[in-house]
Length: 483
Image 1 (cartoon, helix red, strand yellow):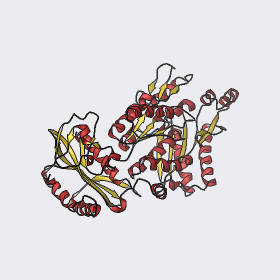
Image 2: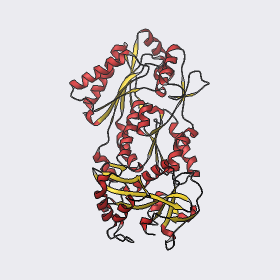
Image 3: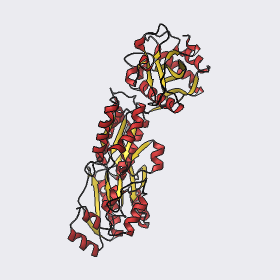
Image 4: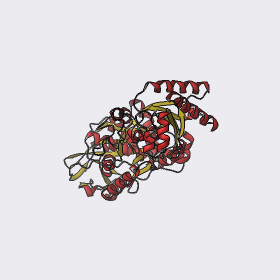
């Protein structure tokens, strides 16, 4: 994993999904009385929020953006691990959420100057923002770096569009989307609004008589747009959603699905969401709609990767298995062939360490790209004085993938797992120009002394957790190193 993903709760993704995907969500606050503010999805469920609106027709709830501290709390775990952060925020045209996130980044970098935090205006809202986060997860899982991911995401965010309707005009009137007179007349005549969201803004409001007809019109407007723009929805993420669960939503979804099937343009990915409170305060309890966002393509990833710091295609970092041993041997041998300070036996060292008491199978990792093992890293048990530490050796990447971030990705994932296993330090003897990029510093700054004869400028350590214990003493490697 090359970066961590944070989003505000406007993304309207389920808690189950975000937990599985490893996405941190920073909640908006909602208030039903203008005094007490509750965290959306945590202190008040979205359905309960809508039920309160339904039960109190004269209630006009308010939302408040996440605080700077909320964002700092979300960023801090990744920053302490040395992982970059990509924070995706509700369009700044709707909220100051992005500014709060940017201020949190500024505050954190005072204490953590090496922290890499990118705050991105999604220019999207509700389900579209959720689809955007899903595409971000796909980039992360394909091994894209933070900078590459941002460049790819910038290519797709303007493709998002939502078509929706709601039952009641009074919330739109309250928000200035329609005039008071139109609201009064519309309520008497059962007029329903049709709305679109695109380019970071709500488009002009169109009016339609009757709830059933307004839902049909949403489907018609969506299909007309897709046909006019010649959009092939197989290359898009698609979502339908509702606020408070209502029976007409199911009929709308099935009607839309039927129309798309008849047009031969059924999406490959179809999500169902619950539209959250950040939009619900403007629509009332009964929004229903559909939206879509283009998926990034492998070609776009390759173009943005070219000359950048990630391997082309999708990279998967996983635990080494027995069937990988021969491929790993070839990777190690190729990586160190002709390398400065290499003795040509590094592949044999890996095999000996696998048999040793110092071996940790959780920390023998491979990087797999397009089904091929392109890199390998091994951390083994060692000691600095009386303190258990890890020895990083060797790190191997096939020559054709060197300089593309494979090694850095392996190091980062190794650090993450090492932290889960309770280790506080990783120590390496290696390039004084390469390893500092992954956060390594001279080991002596942590109180770790090199064995006799080791050059101090090449002997470095990384502190895995802020709560790592103080350490003092000389590094002792597993006997298989022959040191």
